[in-house]
Length: 77
Image 1 (cartoon, rainbow, N blue to C red):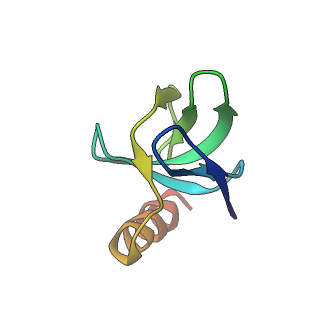
Image 2: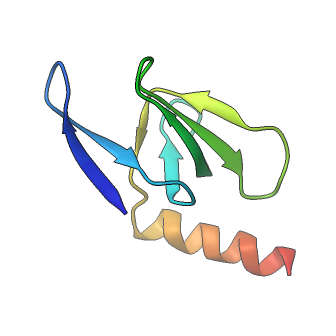
């Protein structure tokens, strides 16, 4: 689920917790843990487990990203 909120330059996408997100700065997929409205950053958890990270540069996943996430999750089961 995504929400559109006005930003200083235009609309920004805010992912809901548990939503798949592509960190475009790192080129990695993650699952949304939290949103910080003050810093406009999202906290992501790696799909493979491990340390969470924050990014301010992200986008919704495309179809290829979603397929990659399903493969990673299937491999973990």
